[in-house]
Length: 506
Image 1 (spheres, rainbow, N blue to C red):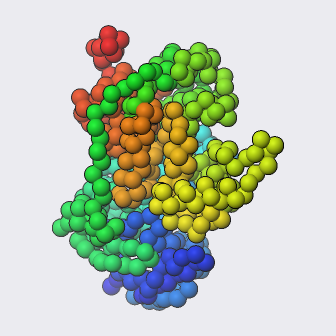
Image 2 (spheres, rainbow, N blue to C red):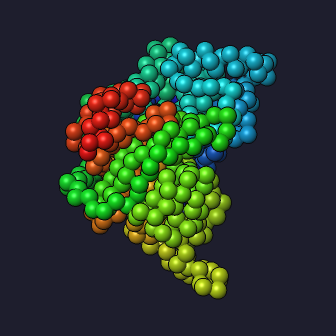
Image 3 (cartoon, rainbow, N blue to C red):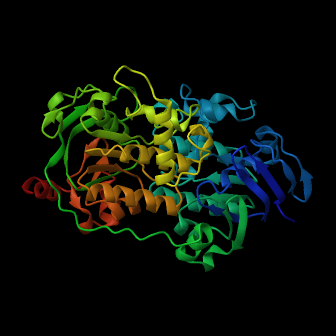
């Protein structure tokens, strides 16, 4: 008997038909991938299964009987759990309190806290149940969501980009967990843009394009190239990563030490590195090791740094505001798309005003015509699937919003671009487009600092690499000379004294 069957499910939004007569069949104990480019309708379909969105037409069966799931509470009662790509956590509550909200209140908060520790340990997910969510990085928040879903012992687990900010070791640990769940009879719907993961983990793969199912395959019998062709109609373009010829020093960070601003996070400890014109410096590391604190200091959100500890073209800027740093040529893409990179409830045109001032006259008037023109330009140049300049940021898929935000900053012609998690949750075609745009910006003479937990991405685009661990930054190493094993060791803080000496001599 099928665990889940969807028959001709359709959902129309004002600007797009997200799902068009979708058919999907999931067996008990099956790990079933749903693959498609950004905006293909995957997340909408998952929300329909979870009861967060009502379909316009179609049928759903659960264990052979027809059901109508009107809300997530009904879905959870059936045994359906979902981990969303955009998290649904309350910032002011602890991880344990957030998990407790979605569980049977017969459990006490103390019971939930104990179970979180147990489940996190069994599944290799590092979660501190007592930490407030606002102190957690994106990767740490994702672990909370995964643990919350696993605590319900689901019969169908829906995972939307679950490994986008997990380390390779954590991904393998999660795969062990998912295979164990499947062996116990739990069905898993797995959305990911990482083709290697789908081929290694999943038994079946349903491919979507433009809201329609274009095929169902056994991913274990496919190649990355064949899956890409099914998904986007072509193989992703190969990046042309020519050898960099760095120019003058653009950014210099010298012995930057900052205490964490709250009870959690990481202290920055004598952080030093430089970035030069025409190069990309990649920063690897496990989330929660000081990335957030470093990004806040570099972007100007944290103005506590000694002025000379951060220099732009030799000029001390440690105490400068984000606005002043943008005026001096430093642009920044944060890891959180909604809420920091873009305001969810306002239009794309209005979101350009967060970091761009071309539409603001010297008298302070805003030209709505210019903001709309800029948004249209970014939508066209970066192939953003949106309903036009007036579409709200929250109406875009995660990948399309990421393309818009990255495009907004690249299009500003920065002298220094700092990007955190540039392709998190982005499909292979869009990821190649973003990485290509970053390389083109480098080739035009811009200096780039890219923070990513995706080692494949860092090796693909970086000229030099450093690792951040426990608030310290390793010596830099040319990407061509580094190995994944070496960087993995350094991510535990295990760089050697010889590396320090070699870095000092260079």
